[in-house]
Image (cartoon, rainbow, N blue to C red; front, side):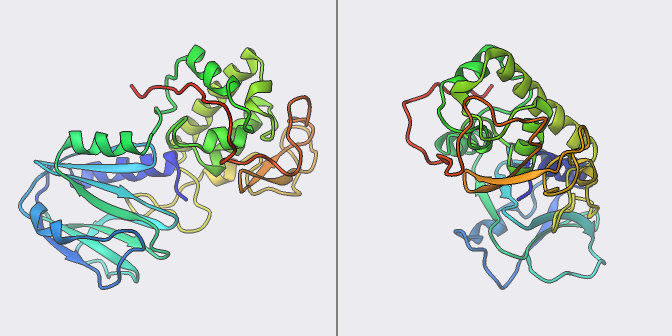
Length: 297
């Protein structure tokens, strides 16, 4: 699934191609997405100008003059800006034609993505609030982050991919952040020292920033809004590198399932020391005492 760096890349690619243009037509593909797929609103955006495009977590918000279109790429979604003359690919679900001959195309092979219309920003923010979407991972309050992590009995992988804790981090960047912080992904949050929490917070922000600069990670289907892939997969230290040598110490990268996800780590640089869960991890759905939450800015 595209994570924060990939979605941010899509947004940055789309802005210069779409902002300031007017939607002249909307075409809906014959095959529906798996989630609720009501595009009766399509006609409502015709004639409206694209005012801005922004990201929130793993979501893309297209701000029209009036309504807002909220896009989630799901597992294999692609949201690209291309010339109308470009041949249409298979699995195309929605096309926004713009007045300069550009088309915004939403393609999704596995159909887990979504495209939804909201009346205004207030409705969008209410949707995110109802989903419990946590804050962006940039500029987090250090003390608040320590409190949230150290109050949790879940493993670090489960904490980091929980979108109610921090928005936008997924499987790839949780593994990479734990590696850079020198923490085993099976460590429980309540076993971390304040210094370890700080190292994790800094690592999350650093790896996301670096990945954005590399246009994200293209492993299978992901392409940015220009149709070009990313390059950060070439900089992965642990993710997807099971059995390969650690780039720091040379030990073989290992894999374990945590929170229902494949998790990768270096056994030497990220030792299974105190507070590390066993093979049967508690997972993302573990019941635990009520915990504090970081507040979105």
